[in-house]
Image (cartoon, rainbow, N blue to C red; front, top):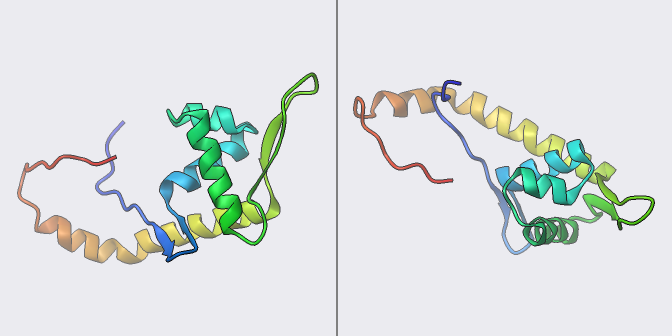
Length: 124
């Protein structure tokens, strides 16, 4: 698998109110795909407590919750994105794609200024 030419990581901050970035969007995406907060967290090498904390933070930040969950037990538990959660994920994903496409010329200009073969440490 080849590494992309660049990576744009978009974080939208509403000061004092909310923040959504690639990590929270990925958590929402994985909850949607797995139907489980714990499974989504495991896939991201994140503790259950951390995943739940992020879900609670997002649920509190928006007018309506983004994730609904049911306790486990004989009938099983699970989690799903609400209509608002689906909308937030869709808007963030579209915004990130637009930023990447719109910023391509500037990113190419920055890349042209990079030292040949130079490497910097990557932050995750």
